[in-house]
Amino acid sequence: MIELKNISKTFAGTQILHDINFTFETGKVNLIIGQSGSGKSVLTKCIVGLHEPDKGGSVLYDDRDFTAMKRRKRKAIRKEIGMLFQHSALFDSLTVEENVGFPLVMFTKMSEEEIADRVNFCLKRVELENKNNLFPSEISGGMQKRVAIARAIAMKPKYLFCDEPNSGLDPKTSIVIDNLIKDITYEYGMTTVVITHDMNSVIEIGDNIMFIFEGKKWWEGDNKSIIRTDNEEINNFVYASEFMKTLKDKLGG
Amino acid sequence: MMLYATFSKPDKLSVFWRRVATECVNIGISSLMIVMIISLFIGISVTTQVGELLSAPWIPDYTLGYTLRQMSILEFSPTIISLILAGKVGSNIAGEIGTMRVTEQIDALDIMGVNSQNYLILPKIIASMFTLPLLVIYSMVACIYGGYFICELTGLRSTEVYVDGIREYFYDEAFTVYWALLKPVIFGFIIASISAYYGYFTKGGALDVGKSGTKSVVTSSLLILAFDVIISSMMF
Image 1 (cartoon, rainbow over the protein chains, first blue to last red):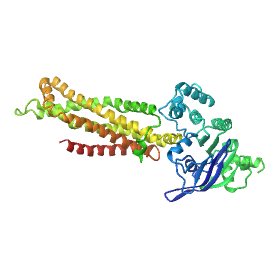
Image 2 (image 1 turned 180 degrees about the horizontal axis):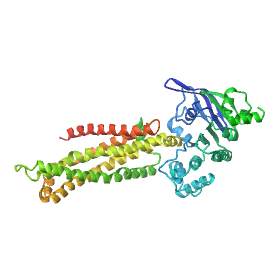
Image 3 (image 1 turned 90 degrees about the vertical axis):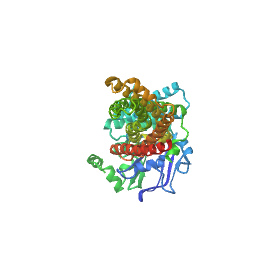
Image 4 (image 1 turned 180 degrees about the vertical axis):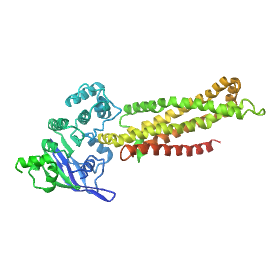
């Protein structure tokens, strides 16, 4: 469980986030949704410690106050975090196998054989066997995302963050990635946080959703309640496309 | 702040030393050919021009070899080669780290709990400080051999006289070699740390990575020249 308490963030006098409180639940796919520029990525960076929230705000990982911790103590929590970046952020100079094994090499005392076994297990889990020796530039965008997921789960994390996992992917591959995120969340009982503005993902995997609008938490609920809400900003977001509007009309509002 | 994080204890020593070895290859061995070619041609060019200038009957013949040796040891090999490497190695370091920054690879390292500054920058600084003096030694040798070849080919001076000039007063002035090898150690630190700084703090996209490369080359070149003056004034 990750709790956000009074998270605000100001850059050069401009307040980006306004007093956000929310709980990301364990064993569920938690979604942060909102329009581009609404503050989703800044909030995520505050949660994982890449940005410090303004004074008074705190992030609690299973009751451990991450924001109050010093660098060394944070390191212990960071080892429990896996992250899938928007553009995968695989290390260009390392092969698929080395990318997945990187955190294991850095932070465990596993033997080479044990690391190879774990890497192969993770790659098999994301259905990418026999790609071990390819470099990131030699595989497709969808494969890169799957390698990034394999790297994120290599250390058996308790918390998984996915920053726009479907960006730049075709609809079919997006569904594969969504299902993979959902499956590994339930399988490993992780606290998964997905940042997205893809409505398919919201409907498919959103167990617990926070909608951010102009840096404020505007709405919270799940994938069933989001399509029935009468909140105007939510409806403007969810039914922005003609397809979704038509679908809503056919379903009778 | 950055230097504190850079010079802290590595997360895993075996990985760290492997990275130092890789960087020695990237920075040192990959620069060897260009250093050798430039030094050889400078040796040829300087010998040809200075040989003509020193052709007066009252100037001893060995002066040509002596001049080339002193030019190579005192200034060309340690300083000019370092300036060339500031362009080649510096832009490479700033580009590599800057690209990692804008593609979120550094964020990925940070989130994993890896000290990204130590992991990325320190191996480059150590490799740079270790390989630059070696490249300077190769440069000195290539420069002097350049002069030898042109004497052999054109008969500008006999090779025996040229070699005599290279040996002239060498033991009396051997301290210049030590200073010449101290310079690239300092210049190596400047090149790697300045370039890594600009790369690490790149903000934006591909255009900004290019700008970081340019800034790193300009700044490290100016610092190399400034430290060259300081070290040279300390030498004599």
